[in-house]
Amino acid sequence: MTVNIPLKQVVDNSYDISIDALPSLYFDTKVAIVTNPTVSKLHLKFLLSRVSAKELHVIVVPDGEEYKNQTSIDIILESMFEHRFNRKSMLIAFGGGVIGDMTGYASSIYQRGIDFIQIPTTLLSQVDASVGGKTGMNNKYGKNLIGAFHQPKAVYIDSYFLTTLPSREFGAGIAEIVKMAVTFNKGFFEFLERADLKDSEVLQDCIKQAVQTKASVVAKDEKEHGIRAALNYGHTFGHVIENETKYKKYLHGEAVAIGIVMANETSLKMGFMDLKTVDRIKKLLEKYNLPTKYNILDIENFYETFYLDKKSSDTKITFILALGLGNVKITDECDKKLIISVLNKFGNK
Image 1 (tube, rainbow, N blue to C red):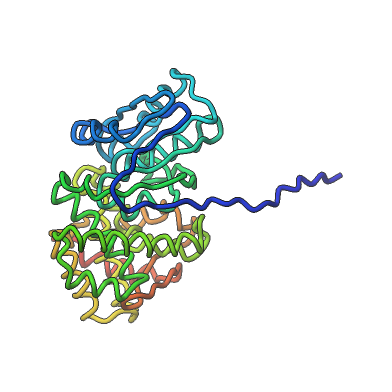
Image 2 (image 1 turned 60 degrees about the vertical axis):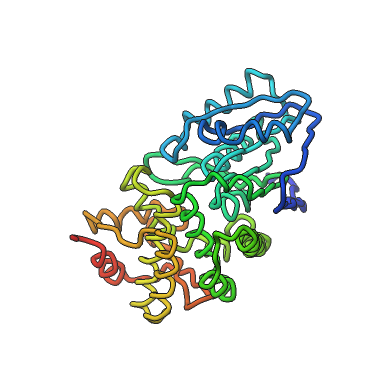
Protein backbone atom coordinates (compact mmCIF):
# COMPACT_ATOMS: atom_id res chain seq x y z
CA MET A 1 0.00 0.00 0.00
CA THR A 2 1.18 3.51 -0.81
CA VAL A 3 -0.05 6.58 1.06
CA ASN A 4 0.61 9.92 -0.60
CA ILE A 5 0.97 13.13 1.38
CA PRO A 6 0.00 16.00 -0.96
CA LEU A 7 2.25 18.88 0.10
CA LYS A 8 2.58 20.80 -3.14
CA GLN A 9 2.22 24.47 -2.38
CA VAL A 10 3.49 27.89 -3.34
CA VAL A 11 5.39 29.68 -0.58
CA ASP A 12 6.04 33.40 -0.96
CA ASN A 13 9.39 34.15 0.66
CA SER A 14 9.62 37.65 -0.81
CA TYR A 15 10.99 40.43 1.37
CA ASP A 16 12.26 43.98 1.07
CA ILE A 17 15.83 45.18 1.37
CA SER A 18 16.00 48.76 2.62
CA ILE A 19 19.16 50.67 1.63
CA ASP A 20 18.75 53.85 3.62
CA ALA A 21 18.95 55.25 7.14
CA LEU A 22 17.67 52.71 9.63
CA PRO A 23 14.04 53.55 10.49
CA SER A 24 12.40 53.18 13.91
CA LEU A 25 11.17 49.60 14.29
CA TYR A 26 8.61 48.20 16.74
CA PHE A 27 7.74 44.54 17.17
CA ASP A 28 4.73 43.33 19.15
CA THR A 29 6.48 40.18 20.33
CA LYS A 30 9.60 38.94 22.12
CA VAL A 31 12.74 39.93 20.23
CA ALA A 32 16.42 39.18 20.75
CA ILE A 33 19.23 41.12 19.14
CA VAL A 34 22.16 38.80 18.39
CA THR A 35 25.51 40.58 18.17
CA ASN A 36 29.16 40.36 19.24
CA PRO A 37 31.28 42.47 21.64
CA THR A 38 32.86 44.57 18.87
CA VAL A 39 29.60 45.62 17.23
CA SER A 40 27.87 45.94 20.60
CA LYS A 41 30.47 48.41 21.85
CA LEU A 42 30.32 50.51 18.69
CA HIS A 43 26.66 50.48 17.71
CA LEU A 44 24.29 48.74 20.14
CA LYS A 45 23.28 52.00 21.82
CA PHE A 46 22.33 53.44 18.41
CA LEU A 47 20.34 50.33 17.50
CA LEU A 48 18.45 50.36 20.79
CA SER A 49 17.38 53.92 20.02
CA ARG A 50 15.75 52.61 16.83
CA VAL A 51 14.34 49.23 17.91
CA SER A 52 11.67 48.50 20.50
CA ALA A 53 9.58 45.43 21.23
CA LYS A 54 7.07 43.92 23.61
CA GLU A 55 10.09 42.31 25.27
CA LEU A 56 13.64 42.98 24.06
CA HIS A 57 16.81 41.02 24.87
CA VAL A 58 20.42 41.16 23.72
CA ILE A 59 22.46 38.00 23.09
CA VAL A 60 26.23 38.46 22.73
CA VAL A 61 28.37 35.73 21.17
CA PRO A 62 32.17 35.76 20.69
CA ASP A 63 33.57 37.71 17.73
CA GLY A 64 35.28 35.90 14.87
CA GLU A 65 34.92 33.24 12.19
CA GLU A 66 36.48 30.64 14.51
CA TYR A 67 33.43 31.03 16.79
CA LYS A 68 30.93 30.28 14.03
CA ASN A 69 30.22 26.91 15.59
CA GLN A 70 27.76 24.84 17.61
CA THR A 71 28.90 26.39 20.90
CA SER A 72 27.82 29.85 19.72
CA ILE A 73 24.56 28.48 18.32
CA ASP A 74 23.87 26.94 21.73
CA ILE A 75 24.42 30.32 23.41
CA ILE A 76 21.71 31.81 21.19
CA LEU A 77 19.28 28.92 21.61
CA GLU A 78 19.71 28.64 25.37
CA SER A 79 19.02 32.34 25.85
CA MET A 80 15.84 31.99 23.81
CA PHE A 81 14.69 29.03 25.90
CA GLU A 82 15.51 30.85 29.14
CA HIS A 83 13.38 33.81 28.07
CA ARG A 84 10.57 31.53 26.87
CA PHE A 85 10.59 32.54 23.25
CA ASN A 86 7.81 31.04 21.16
CA ARG A 87 7.05 30.62 17.47
CA LYS A 88 5.90 34.24 17.21
CA SER A 89 9.16 35.54 18.66
CA MET A 90 11.93 36.93 16.45
CA LEU A 91 15.68 37.37 16.20
CA ILE A 92 17.60 40.37 14.84
CA ALA A 93 21.02 39.65 13.35
CA PHE A 94 23.16 42.69 14.17
CA GLY A 95 26.70 42.30 12.88
CA GLY A 96 28.67 40.92 9.98
CA GLY A 97 28.31 37.74 7.99
CA VAL A 98 29.18 35.43 10.89
CA ILE A 99 26.44 36.91 13.08
CA GLY A 100 23.97 36.90 10.19
CA ASP A 101 24.64 33.26 9.31
CA MET A 102 24.42 32.03 12.89
CA THR A 103 21.35 34.09 13.77
CA GLY A 104 19.57 32.89 10.66
CA TYR A 105 20.47 29.29 11.40
CA ALA A 106 19.38 29.51 15.05
CA SER A 107 16.06 31.02 13.96
CA SER A 108 15.59 28.27 11.37
CA ILE A 109 15.86 25.46 13.96
CA TYR A 110 14.32 27.05 17.08
CA GLN A 111 10.94 25.33 17.51
CA ARG A 112 11.29 24.31 13.83
CA GLY A 113 11.59 27.89 12.62
CA ILE A 114 10.87 31.48 13.66
CA ASP A 115 11.31 34.82 11.91
CA PHE A 116 14.48 36.89 11.83
CA ILE A 117 15.62 40.13 10.22
CA GLN A 118 19.06 41.26 9.14
CA ILE A 119 20.73 44.55 10.12
CA PRO A 120 24.23 44.03 8.65
CA THR A 121 27.10 46.19 9.88
CA THR A 122 29.96 45.24 7.51
CA LEU A 123 30.29 45.88 3.80
CA LEU A 124 30.55 42.15 3.10
CA SER A 125 27.36 41.37 4.97
CA GLN A 126 25.50 44.33 3.46
CA VAL A 127 26.22 43.38 -0.14
CA ASP A 128 26.25 39.59 0.15
CA ALA A 129 25.80 37.60 3.36
CA SER A 130 22.57 39.27 4.49
CA VAL A 131 20.85 38.76 1.13
CA GLY A 132 19.51 35.39 0.00
CA GLY A 133 18.71 33.36 3.10
CA LYS A 134 21.84 31.22 3.41
CA THR A 135 22.41 30.41 7.08
CA GLY A 136 24.78 28.08 8.86
CA MET A 137 27.91 27.39 10.83
CA ASN A 138 31.34 25.81 10.38
CA ASN A 139 32.78 22.57 11.71
CA LYS A 140 36.16 20.84 11.54
CA TYR A 141 35.43 19.61 8.01
CA GLY A 142 34.83 23.03 6.49
CA LYS A 143 32.86 26.23 6.18
CA ASN A 144 29.05 26.42 6.25
CA LEU A 145 28.68 22.66 5.91
CA ILE A 146 25.83 22.73 8.44
CA GLY A 147 22.95 25.09 7.77
CA ALA A 148 19.64 25.82 6.12
CA PHE A 149 18.03 28.12 3.60
CA HIS A 150 15.94 30.42 5.77
CA GLN A 151 14.98 33.79 4.32
CA PRO A 152 14.86 36.86 6.57
CA LYS A 153 11.65 38.84 6.82
CA ALA A 154 13.52 42.05 5.98
CA VAL A 155 17.02 43.46 5.54
CA TYR A 156 17.97 46.99 6.64
CA ILE A 157 21.21 48.28 5.12
CA ASP A 158 22.46 51.51 6.64
CA SER A 159 25.90 52.73 5.50
CA TYR A 160 26.22 54.58 8.81
CA PHE A 161 27.58 51.37 10.32
CA LEU A 162 30.45 51.35 7.83
CA THR A 163 31.95 54.55 9.29
CA THR A 164 33.73 52.48 11.95
CA LEU A 165 34.70 49.60 9.66
CA PRO A 166 38.46 48.74 9.62
CA SER A 167 40.13 48.94 6.21
CA ARG A 168 40.67 45.17 6.04
CA GLU A 169 36.96 44.54 6.64
CA PHE A 170 36.12 47.09 3.95
CA GLY A 171 38.40 45.32 1.49
CA ALA A 172 36.84 41.96 2.37
CA GLY A 173 33.48 43.35 1.29
CA ILE A 174 34.96 44.61 -1.96
CA ALA A 175 36.03 41.05 -2.81
CA GLU A 176 32.39 39.90 -2.71
CA ILE A 177 31.34 42.88 -4.81
CA VAL A 178 34.00 42.07 -7.41
CA LYS A 179 32.78 38.46 -7.40
CA MET A 180 29.27 39.52 -8.41
CA ALA A 181 30.46 42.02 -11.00
CA VAL A 182 32.80 39.57 -12.76
CA THR A 183 30.24 36.77 -12.95
CA PHE A 184 27.03 38.66 -13.68
CA ASN A 185 27.51 42.33 -14.49
CA LYS A 186 30.27 43.59 -16.80
CA GLY A 187 29.02 47.18 -16.58
CA PHE A 188 29.23 47.02 -12.79
CA PHE A 189 32.82 45.78 -13.03
CA GLU A 190 33.74 48.72 -15.25
CA PHE A 191 32.04 51.05 -12.77
CA LEU A 192 34.20 49.57 -9.97
CA GLU A 193 37.39 50.10 -11.97
CA ARG A 194 36.83 53.86 -12.12
CA ALA A 195 34.85 54.39 -8.87
CA ASP A 196 36.15 56.05 -5.72
CA LEU A 197 34.41 54.02 -3.03
CA LYS A 198 35.72 56.35 -0.34
CA ASP A 199 33.03 58.76 -1.55
CA SER A 200 29.92 57.96 0.51
CA GLU A 201 27.49 58.59 -2.36
CA VAL A 202 29.49 56.41 -4.75
CA LEU A 203 29.67 53.70 -2.10
CA GLN A 204 25.90 53.86 -1.61
CA ASP A 205 25.43 53.39 -5.36
CA CYS A 206 27.90 50.48 -5.30
CA ILE A 207 25.98 48.75 -2.49
CA LYS A 208 22.73 49.23 -4.38
CA GLN A 209 24.14 47.71 -7.58
CA ALA A 210 25.64 44.76 -5.70
CA VAL A 211 22.40 44.01 -3.85
CA GLN A 212 20.35 44.30 -7.04
CA THR A 213 22.74 41.93 -8.82
CA LYS A 214 22.57 39.30 -6.08
CA ALA A 215 18.81 39.70 -5.60
CA SER A 216 18.19 39.03 -9.29
CA VAL A 217 20.18 35.79 -9.07
CA VAL A 218 18.51 34.63 -5.85
CA ALA A 219 15.08 35.31 -7.33
CA LYS A 220 15.86 32.87 -10.14
CA ASP A 221 17.31 30.14 -7.92
CA GLU A 222 16.51 30.53 -4.22
CA LYS A 223 17.98 27.24 -2.99
CA GLU A 224 21.02 27.01 -5.25
CA HIS A 225 19.93 24.21 -7.55
CA GLY A 226 21.44 25.99 -10.56
CA ILE A 227 22.70 29.46 -11.45
CA ARG A 228 22.94 30.73 -7.85
CA ALA A 229 25.92 28.41 -7.35
CA ALA A 230 27.84 30.80 -9.61
CA LEU A 231 27.91 33.26 -6.70
CA ASN A 232 30.46 30.89 -5.19
CA TYR A 233 33.05 32.13 -7.70
CA GLY A 234 36.34 32.23 -5.78
CA HIS A 235 34.84 30.33 -2.85
CA THR A 236 35.79 26.78 -3.85
CA PHE A 237 39.46 27.72 -3.52
CA GLY A 238 38.85 30.30 -0.78
CA HIS A 239 37.10 27.90 1.58
CA VAL A 240 40.08 25.53 1.45
CA ILE A 241 42.38 28.43 2.31
CA GLU A 242 40.19 29.36 5.28
CA ASN A 243 40.12 25.76 6.45
CA GLU A 244 43.90 25.37 6.15
CA THR A 245 44.56 28.57 8.10
CA LYS A 246 41.93 27.74 10.77
CA TYR A 247 39.91 30.88 9.92
CA LYS A 248 42.51 33.03 11.70
CA LYS A 249 44.89 34.40 9.04
CA TYR A 250 42.40 35.73 6.49
CA LEU A 251 39.03 37.40 6.62
CA HIS A 252 36.45 35.58 4.49
CA GLY A 253 36.61 38.18 1.72
CA GLU A 254 40.40 38.04 1.70
CA ALA A 255 40.34 34.27 1.19
CA VAL A 256 37.76 34.76 -1.56
CA ALA A 257 40.06 37.29 -3.27
CA ILE A 258 42.85 34.71 -3.42
CA GLY A 259 40.28 32.15 -4.56
CA ILE A 260 39.20 34.44 -7.39
CA VAL A 261 42.82 34.69 -8.58
CA MET A 262 43.13 30.89 -8.46
CA ALA A 263 39.83 30.42 -10.31
CA ASN A 264 40.97 32.90 -12.96
CA GLU A 265 44.22 31.00 -13.45
CA THR A 266 42.06 27.93 -14.08
CA SER A 267 39.90 29.84 -16.58
CA LEU A 268 43.05 31.08 -18.31
CA LYS A 269 44.43 27.54 -18.68
CA MET A 270 41.09 26.30 -20.02
CA GLY A 271 40.83 29.15 -22.53
CA PHE A 272 37.78 30.77 -20.89
CA MET A 273 39.55 34.04 -20.05
CA ASP A 274 42.42 36.01 -21.56
CA LEU A 275 45.47 37.28 -19.67
CA LYS A 276 44.38 40.93 -19.95
CA THR A 277 41.09 40.21 -18.15
CA VAL A 278 42.87 38.12 -15.53
CA ASP A 279 45.18 41.05 -14.82
CA ARG A 280 42.30 43.57 -14.71
CA ILE A 281 40.51 41.57 -12.03
CA LYS A 282 43.70 41.08 -10.01
CA LYS A 283 44.48 44.79 -10.26
CA LEU A 284 41.01 45.72 -8.97
CA LEU A 285 41.41 43.40 -5.98
CA GLU A 286 44.85 44.81 -5.19
CA LYS A 287 43.47 48.34 -5.40
CA TYR A 288 41.79 47.59 -2.06
CA ASN A 289 44.87 45.85 -0.58
CA LEU A 290 43.33 42.42 -0.91
CA PRO A 291 45.75 39.47 -0.90
CA THR A 292 46.23 37.71 -4.22
CA LYS A 293 49.02 35.29 -3.28
CA TYR A 294 49.04 32.14 -1.17
CA ASN A 295 51.64 29.49 -0.42
CA ILE A 296 50.15 25.98 -0.62
CA LEU A 297 52.25 23.66 1.52
CA ASP A 298 50.62 20.38 0.46
CA ILE A 299 49.19 20.45 -3.08
CA GLU A 300 47.54 17.02 -2.90
CA ASN A 301 45.87 17.73 0.45
CA PHE A 302 44.62 21.09 -0.88
CA TYR A 303 43.08 19.29 -3.85
CA GLU A 304 41.46 16.57 -1.74
CA THR A 305 39.82 19.21 0.50
CA PHE A 306 37.81 20.39 -2.53
CA TYR A 307 35.66 17.28 -2.08
CA LEU A 308 34.25 18.74 1.15
CA ASP A 309 32.78 21.65 -0.81
CA LYS A 310 28.95 21.63 -0.74
CA LYS A 311 28.76 21.84 -4.55
CA SER A 312 30.92 18.78 -5.09
CA SER A 313 30.04 15.09 -5.08
CA ASP A 314 32.12 12.24 -3.71
CA THR A 315 33.69 11.70 -7.13
CA LYS A 316 33.60 15.08 -8.88
CA ILE A 317 34.60 18.61 -7.88
CA THR A 318 32.49 21.53 -9.05
CA PHE A 319 34.32 24.72 -10.03
CA ILE A 320 32.89 28.16 -10.78
CA LEU A 321 34.82 29.75 -13.64
CA ALA A 322 34.35 33.22 -15.11
CA LEU A 323 34.05 33.45 -18.89
CA GLY A 324 35.57 36.87 -19.35
CA LEU A 325 33.49 39.58 -17.67
CA GLY A 326 29.77 39.22 -17.03
CA ASN A 327 29.48 35.53 -17.79
CA VAL A 328 30.17 32.37 -15.82
CA LYS A 329 30.38 28.60 -16.12
CA ILE A 330 29.60 25.96 -13.49
CA THR A 331 31.51 22.77 -14.31
CA ASP A 332 32.59 19.48 -12.79
CA GLU A 333 34.68 18.56 -15.82
CA CYS A 334 38.02 20.09 -14.81
CA ASP A 335 40.86 17.62 -15.25
CA LYS A 336 42.79 16.95 -12.05
CA LYS A 337 46.15 17.46 -13.80
CA LEU A 338 45.04 20.91 -14.93
CA ILE A 339 43.90 21.91 -11.42
CA ILE A 340 47.13 20.57 -9.91
CA SER A 341 49.11 22.67 -12.42
CA VAL A 342 47.18 25.75 -11.22
CA LEU A 343 47.82 24.89 -7.58
CA ASN A 344 51.51 24.40 -8.31
CA LYS A 345 51.70 28.09 -9.23
CA PHE A 346 50.81 28.81 -5.61
CA GLY A 347 53.04 26.20 -3.99
CA ASN A 348 56.60 25.96 -2.71
CA LYS A 349 57.26 29.69 -2.56
